[in-house]
Amino acid sequence: MTALIECQQLSKRFAAQTALDQLSFELHSQQPVALIGPNGAGKSTLFSIICGYQFADSGTIRVMGHAPGSAALRGQIGALPQDALFDPDLALLQQLQFLARLQGFSRAPALTEAQRVCELMGLADKHKVLPSQLSHGMKKRLSIAQALIGSPKLVLLDEPTAGLDPENALNIRRCIEQLADDTRFIISSHNLSELEKLCSQVLFLNQGRLQLQQNLQQQHSNLLTLQLWQSHAQLPDAIRQLSGVRQVKQQREQLQIDYDQQHNPALDQQLLQLLARLDIRYRQLSHGQSLEQQLFDLG
Ligand SMILES: Nc1ncnc2c1ncn2[C@@H]1O[C@H](COP(=O)(O)OP(=O)(O)OP(=O)(O)O)[C@@H](O)[C@H]1O
Image 1 (cartoon, protein in one colour):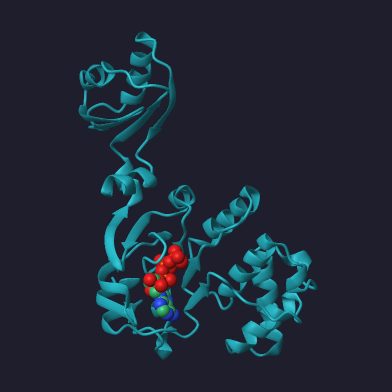
Image 2 (cartoon, rainbow, N blue to C red):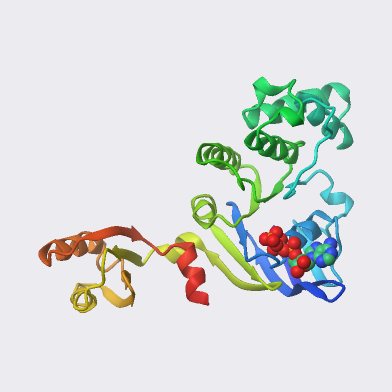
């Protein structure tokens, strides 16, 4: 099957600054993919190369089998840039219609397409509003709406919920979830818990290099994370006695329990019974390990 993205030894420099450093990976995911990394890791540069806005200095990249910027990819990639700009004089629907015209839609179909993406992003009642009158959340939705014009196969979202309140962030997450059956998303964000809810795979960039590529669900299948109010010296050993437990790691008030799920699918219940028996109060018991913790473990 053709990879969604395939890069080999991709490098990009800006004067003395290395943005991407011999980056190699293949993406085959049908579900949204998270692109994460600290500030300056190279995420926006990678997005920009995928879109064909910038070119790598060396290495190769194929997007759905084609070179970025090639005619075969025209209309196939939509992008939400980190700071999208709008024409201050055009109302929301006109704005989207104009962008649809730029993509090759003629006048009437451009209007229909603008209405469609407005509807998708819950902006149907805001057709006549100017960008300056939109709240931050609505501007974000407008930016995502423009990325969806023409139903691209791949949509790149750079910080889609940055600066949004929880309700608006949830609305955007729901929209992405609804579209994810037909559209591939790559989402760059610093909000790791949000990405965990949306994405099935994560790419972690650091200093322009790939530090981790991982399937999130797979990683979670055999792990329990127990958060205590305070550490208990004897608890790890008591847990090790439970059937199916392979390893118990303690980090202050947090225990990570690696176990054989097939051998003992009811370990979580047995763990709660053990805590009750020892009269130990706990804050949270969750399946898997948070993305944040995984990255912390990587150092
Ligand atoms: N146009 C440019 N001119 C000069 N340096 C640049 C340019 N674009 C990116 N860089 C540098 O390349 C590196 C990678 O930047 P990039 O914006 O891709 O990182 P990022 O992971 O998207 O960061 P952030 O999370 O802060 O958005 C940084 O050191 C940045 O300063």
